[in-house]
Length: 187
Image (cartoon, rainbow, N blue to C red; front, side):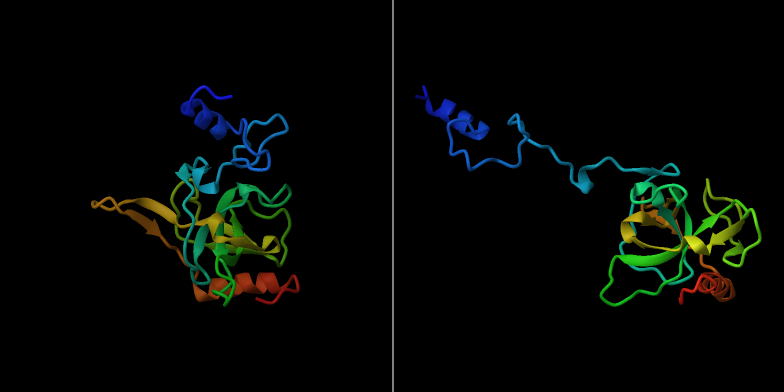
């Protein structure tokens, strides 16, 4: 049936003339292989001109991070783009890889409400250089670390990345937590 061992090996790699129950991975109905990209194989997603580098460890409450809401799972009128957010939860036991954040916006609210808190923060790297922001406490979300990143400020002369880790004062963090409690949530 096969002219040579080489033809047999080539055919068996394609699944021709072999046991039909054994296949190399999933196939479409036409027999072509289904190709799946693992997250590590995907092209880095851009967030404000920087590639996606998730944080690996929990950061303390009050730390301002970049949260990428555009990575899926959110739809308008929810947050749908990368933006600064403040971490409001401590590291929780048995919940590694998650933290609760409140997004920050440079757009003032249309109406004065108790769950939007005006803050003055240190300038962040572009495009987030505004120092007056509003914590949108009604948009609180528990997100995975893969959505979060620290702000990059360049590289050290050794080539290692340098990060900015701004933090809210304890008073400002408490004001944000009060804004969340107004909604009936405890923080």
